[in-house]
Amino acid sequence: MERWEGRVALVTGASAGIGALLVKELAKAGLRVVGCARRLKPMEDLRNELTNEKGKVFPIKCDLASKDDIMAMFKEIETNQELGRIDVCINNAGLNFKEQLLQFDLQHLRQMIDINVLGANLCIQRSVLLMRKLNINDGQIININSNCGHKVFPAAGLRFYSATKFALTALTEGWRQELRGLNSGIRVCQISPGYVNDTDFFKSMMDGMNLSALIAELPLGIKGMDVVNTCLYVLSCPAHMEVNDIIMRETEAGVESGI
Image (cartoon, rainbow, N blue to C red; front, top):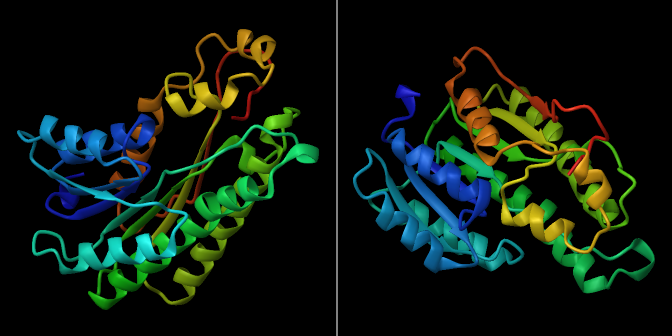
């Protein structure tokens, strides 16, 4: 991780859960970390908590469903004298509504596509454009996906979420092909965890979804720090090695949650 000291990482969905853990660990490793989310206060608290670390946290309020917000965020990054670049882009933000397909509200569908697919794609595009503008040839894109990006699980409230995560899987491979074709040196990886049992995102996603029997078969699940440590592994790989697709599942016997 030493080669990343002093360099700039963008983490979306940084106000809680895996995103907040990523911000902490990257700052401890000496990176300048841009944390973006719709809620600014939790990220400001995180910045204040990490003032004695080698790195530094830069909170930016950004709604990833808004193209204007995303473009403004990248302009702020590029013009900030302490930043000015992006070396690592970690798309961690995600959204799910729990309606069945027959009941889905069209606005909810659009919000999920905007954040899980279009917002992530635009963050990759703007990061790559800035990397290439500055001749950064060892940048890293990491998409935090899900087991749901590889299989549609029999849970009513996850079906459209799976559709957005399958799209993210396709985009990850598309970006890998495009960047490889450009001989850019920029690497692309997606990390797809199963049931992460210690984040608010998954607790809220499972609320009222009748998954109690399934979750009872998964007493431990995956921890948020397991996902973070996997990101750190990807970042620690040598420049001549590209890790593209990591699927994380629970070790315990029983039904795979796929969340």
